[in-house]
Amino acid sequence: MSDEGSRLKTIASFRDLPLAELAKIKLESEGIPCFLQNKNLVAVDWALSFATGGVKLQTPEEYAETAKQILDEDCSAELASLEDEFPEPEKSDLMRIMGQVLEGR
Image (cartoon, rainbow, N blue to C red; front, top):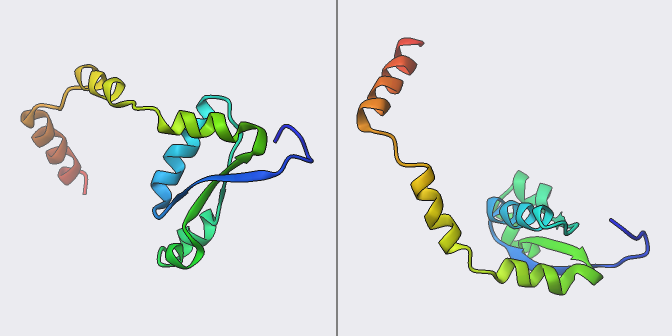
């Protein structure tokens, strides 16, 4: 992190590790340093997520408000536009790929 004396603040908690990782990646892509507390514990035993309060996304205090705003942004329009760039494959493509996979066994 930028300052060794900086305190971490929990800005969000997640039951599921993949969702926590996505939020972390989003913040890091915006230049916000962050850390996932309990990440390894929950990865070992998912049920411990309930006992520990989930995977906690933490940032230095000076980034906390900006990080919350970034996570609260509605990105649904951006995601919808990606559907045009990555159309679903044709069924014939899927069948061809599955055939290749099965033949490779």
